[in-house]
Length: 230
Length: 230
Image (cartoon, rainbow over the protein chains, first blue to last red):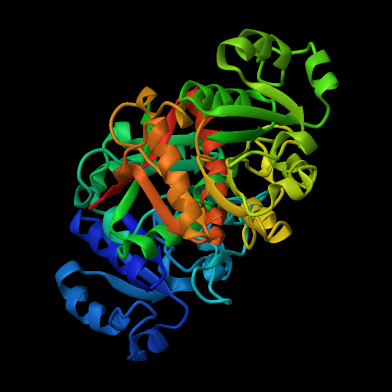
């Protein structure tokens, strides 16, 4: 499949590499290709600059890099891996090329303006997933994978045994397609929990406040939530 | 121990009965004893009126009922089982009898004013646990047990295998005491996750938005969260 990944951060890199490894034709979208490639500083988490990763991966995985306006014309599926604060602008920059497409939204509206732990910039009676769906009614938004580190998103076997991934969205066909992608990442059907329409993204985005605190108290992002039933 | 449980709803009943069963001397606090006993309608979840439960339990368990002002003078520990919206007023009504005491806060700031699913009336950069701690600086607040149905709070074995309970609070001694109570309820030490100070209650209270949606999609409240580590 032709898949466009929005965002050049660690989440976009990990998702793009996984999709390419599965045989998809992947284009990464960014605001400014030259600026993205010229950046030579590590990110806030200490990950190397995008260009370093890209130089190692572009030939091996045939991953393309393009400005948003040129990234998605032939895409059959979009992955939003931008930061939550940048998501709406990034999708806007796709212009008409996003119309009618499925967007898998893994972003969270984290607000680091007051430091760590972040609060949420959209919360309680709204969610980033809903904001995106409302702003782009022609896109089919499926919120998923946003409740774990990107390393587990594409390789659930890192965490032993059963643990879960949540799905929220208004379009059943889009959710079916998203679940197929999840299964190709290694998620078993019994660990994919469909919460309902896109308003249920309020539930998964509000897992982040405990996620960031668990990461701090456990000193690792390598964990996931499991819903255990009686 | 002398323990006062604030709140006569199903959570207060289940906690009071468990504590009494463990040999504690339990007093349930309420706004107006006569009114509480005169109520003859089921609650929003279809549970029988308090008086029906109380008549079956008061002799068997020697549970007392008292107005807030008279409920806590000899208490060594307080349990907040009121609804989140009523918690501050209930604790205020204890007057000076709350001073210096540990309060185990299991309430959530659920706002049902727009129907189901509820939103949160305190959220994101604050939490009910913090509101209570701030309003009553002489009380040692420990937030715990608020992320599951009351039936699992007092009987974790209902849910098979490992699953977790979270603890938040500023006072280490109070948290140690709360953890002892949790262990007496059946929680093993490895399933008690201490998140840190009372601000971490933001994390556990914001689990409610997904909890209420999971309850709806799974059609049962009989489940709990487990943090699975890599």
